[in-house]
Amino acid sequence: MARSKGTETALELLRYLPRVSQYNVLHNPGEFKKKNRPRGQHGGTTHGHGNKGAKQRCSYPRLGFEGRKKPFYLKVPREFYYRGHHLRRQYPPVSLEQLQLLIDTGRVDPSQPIDLTSICNTQLYKIYPFEKHFGVHLTDEGADCFTAKVNIEVQHAKETVIAAIERNGGTIINAYYDIDSVLAKVNPQKFFERGHPIPFRKLPPEDAVEFYTDPKCRGYLADPEKIADERLALAQKYGYELPDISKDPDYDMLTIRKDPRQIFLGLEPGWLVNLAEKCILRPTDQVLQEYYKS
Image 1 (cartoon, one colour):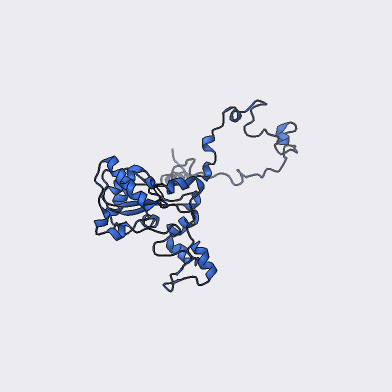
Image 2 (spheres, rainbow, N blue to C red):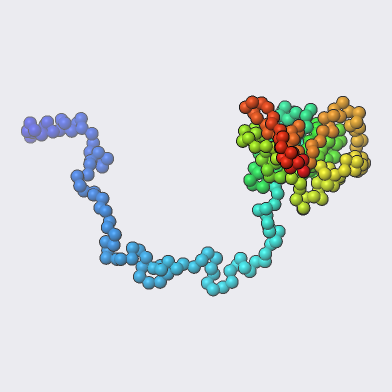
């Protein structure tokens, strides 16, 4: 059967055209048109809030309501252990093992007195004073492998930590710093750039006076003679021979102590450190001198 010329042309064209499928066939123009739904199109006037009841008035019960019964949080007895927990002083810990690692890697210099500023300058220990962080808590983890001889000042340390440091011929002191002093010690450069005079360190609060005046805890307000007696008693308790630091070549470094009102070693309260001109300004007014010495 003979085919027409138009049929042959159409069949020849289909050999080279792509196969027709749902992926290459477009919709008719205007077939799918998005319609904007007007407000209250179904004849309602409440906009989905109903006509009666709590759904209309939005009078939902409060959180914890259990249908006119006593809620569970009133049935459970109160735990006074958590009373005032947001006001408690926090001391982020540093172990003796971590301190030994900082000394071995050169981040902390044991030939100089170590305090909160020295530990924060390693950039491996973070203090957040606005979260009630008041300083360093030195823990006894790694006390057996601690071999450094240091003069360290922390804010809290137990008896085992004191024994581990004094066994190597070092000295330790527990000292209190208030929030303003901690802000200055965490980042001294930032504090000096503000142009504020160095504040004096405040005395510990009433609940911490006993700890910081106890020679057994090596408090910075304790009698030095009683501390010397407690050093010998602690050595007898733990069974090690107490080194005589008076004959130690590093005796001057091991016996350096700050004044109870002093924050930075070598800098007195009231002094103003000018980093731009690299000078220290001291108060000349007699009233200011008496204020910072009080």
